[in-house]
Length: 279
Image 1 (tube, helix red, strand yellow):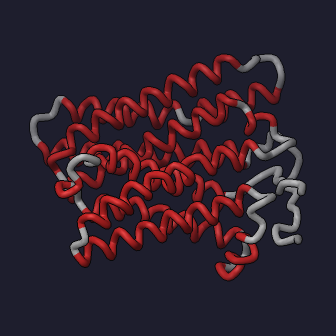
Image 2 (cartoon, helix red, strand yellow; image 1 turned 60 degrees about the horizontal axis):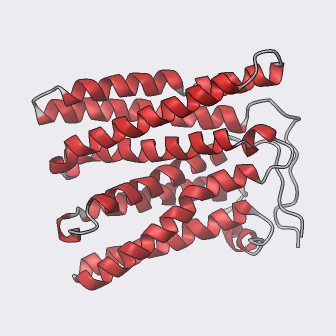
Image 3 (tube, helix red, strand yellow; image 1 turned 180 degrees about the horizontal axis):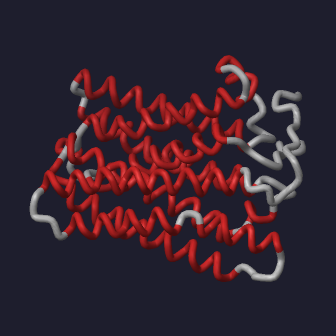
């Protein structure tokens, strides 16, 4: 059966790809920090990742017209990565609901089981944006390995920056390490984007436009990296947290701007929609 194809996406899908990647990355990174000592983990921090993905799912469902289109869309999971994304997000959110109930009832063993299961669902949510874009036959830029790497790294870095921002209010003890992780992932994203952008040719208009798309993430991420470096050298936790909060907002803006440019770049013909619910 022929897969769903789309030549351009709008702001709602871009927002979903940002939030689903950030929320799942936040969960993966935070859970990894406390995988051997979940009793020290903050329930609010763990559940924040699910809340972010839930907001992204609302954006995705609104792109489909109405939330009640959920079931009609999910039935097309065999031919549409967007439908699979709806299913992955839903499974991840159901796991989050189970974790919330386990915390409320004090079932520590269930928290560990559902927490580990959540990692698998979070990984599916994380890779779904990449697979959705790689499924586009006519958009070569979306199918490139360089694009996939930058999307994944920017999602991970965004999740890390959100952890650093929330740490100020929810768990100050991990503020410093969350800043260090954010810096490492932002630097990796900058390097990947710069290398891929520089590898593109300079002559063709298409390639010049593609370079502009990947360069759009460089300035906000560089500013965010500089702010995090400033925070590291600060001796006051409150000042560190404040700087991390600002750096997080700038990094999130850069990630969203990059996705908006990539998904609605004008590098391809006008939007062509197929019937999402065709049997």
